[in-house]
Image (tube, rainbow, N blue to C red; front, top):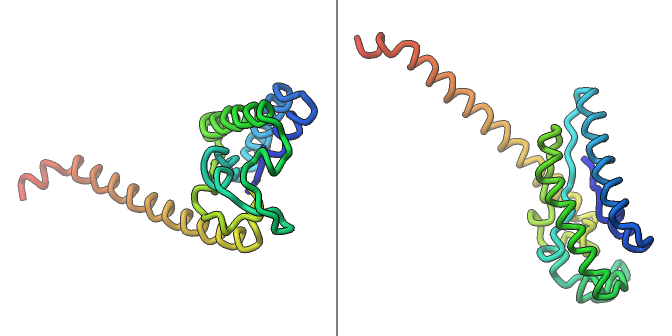
Length: 171
């Protein structure tokens, strides 16, 4: 399980090198998927939270407990840098949602699974948040396995009924 991206984007903005930072991040994420696949490992990514939604779009506090009203306040970015950051996050989210699953990775939109009380800043889960995240991911895995078993059983039943349609009709 890998949490990736937001620091890379912030670093790209801080160093006035956002296009290269985005490109490098995309290449690194795909390389991680390829490496994992070559070793028969399933790799999951925590998607970068949408900066216009939870928790980035909600009020939060710093570790010191200081209220922060916006991403711009937290990072001391100007309005132009904030717009640039939001646009970059959206591009990387689109990349993660489309390219990583095609390559064999799994992307989890964790920020929309948990309330703001589970984060210590705009995008990092607190200790309590990581416990909640583990519970949510475990439940999703169980649901996914149940769904897989039910779908496989349904397909098998369809196959048998199709193959034995004449026998069923004769009965």
